[in-house]
Image (tube, rainbow, N blue to C red; front, top):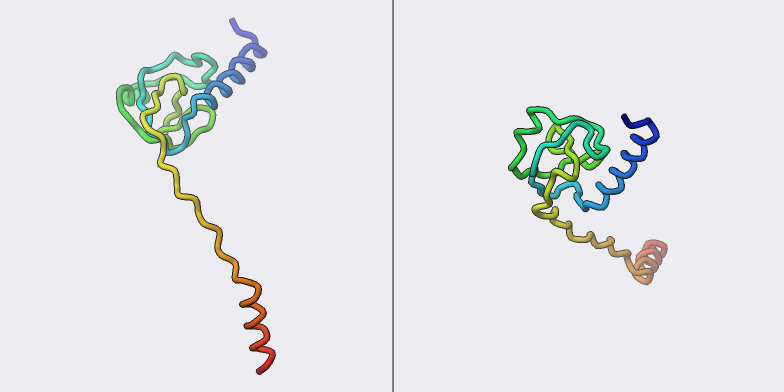
Amino acid sequence: METDAEKSELRAAYRVMQAASGIEVGDTVKVLRSFKSYEMGFGYHCNNQKCKYVGHEAIVDEVDYGIVIGDWSFPFFCLELVSKAPKEAPKEAPKKPQRRMLLLKYRTRMAR
């Protein structure tokens, strides 16, 4: 039987490994298998509703303590990354008006 300290260490190790899996929100993953309750430090158990996802692909809704698909959280080690979420095009910073143009507008207003 594991002590609380061992469980805590296992959970911390799970978080590190999940981060290293590279799975992010919006990615498409395939659920490969079910899992045992509290397997490898994952803090949740498997149930019949989660087992229905096995063999199917889904889009990741959230990454927290587990990979959230719909209403259910899955451990990273039961998932296979199918494709990464498309990256959004970087937004261009709004162009600042040139200082000279601002001065001309200011002078024009002052001259009136």
